[in-house]
Image 1 (cartoon, rainbow over the protein chains, first blue to last red):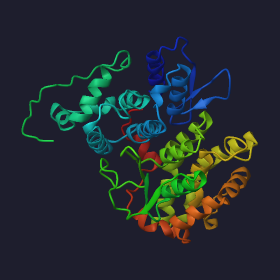
Image 2 (cartoon, rainbow over the protein chains, first blue to last red; image 1 turned 135 degrees about the vertical axis):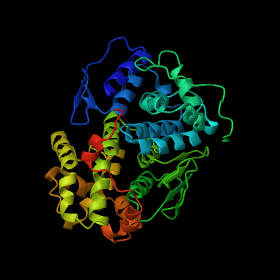
Image 3 (cartoon, rainbow over the protein chains, first blue to last red; image 1 turned 90 degrees about the vertical axis):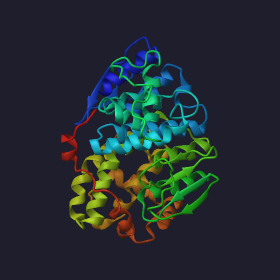
Image 4 (cartoon, chains in turn green, brown; image 1 turned 45 degrees about the vertical axis):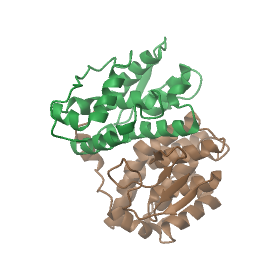
Length: 173
Length: 218
């Protein structure tokens, strides 16, 4: 999965020459063999490298503070969301729903690498939600729907239908 | 800026050490383990850094990286790689090891759990042939990894049999004044026992086998 995400990210970034990746260990950690330097391993490390290669530093945050926030959500994505159980998924969606209550993006006022990688990794969790559950997590689904309709991000993943009009009106948030 | 930490929480070792190394301007407040500082997280999570904008950082690695960046030391790609490895590979093993040693009293079994990650570290240090993980100077990667390993590597009774390169590197970083001072504040000179009340409140870690069989979206 990590390799598909990296290849989708390459396309989003408009990198012309696709890189060659291998994986290592039981967890299939992606490894990038680079021509000028030692190999890099780890999804986040390689993704940050690709962003720099594509000269899109704004995707990593434009201030020290937003860079820290981006890194924090990247770490959250690979440690918490990736490999999450059903129980974990509930807690993750609850936390994110509260966090995104007053936000359009995970960090600052523009899209970042954290939005892109979290979108890739949270896709199966959102796919599992019923219409009612989507409404209970209205901030997460709003954010998700926004990112999945971003030009050229979606690539390897199907679009998930998100209703914009509520059909369950008894719940308040 | 305000940093919230709690006694006996191993993740707080990292940020207190980074704070001293970088000299970041920041108030420190010790709170109870159960205090919910980060408003959007359901589980109490410490350490937490309240940023000037009003946002909270809740990842100890992101907090350390931010303090180093304020100090003019931006994290290199090699640093990034070590920080990611620490979060995805070392932390799950450490959590399991601390749970065994502190909660279950099975200190003798800890070395099995940590052998894999310690070997990775040892091989890289002996191949790199530099005093620190990313070169000739201490970086955020050294501070994060050394303080993460501090509770287990400073406990000689665990007999981890870490390789020679890890031992030399650990002794070098752990001897820094900032590391010693952070360890005193968090562990209170009680070693592993200093973490007991914190560890008892943590959910029991999944063992690596049961993690493999669980649904996984990777």
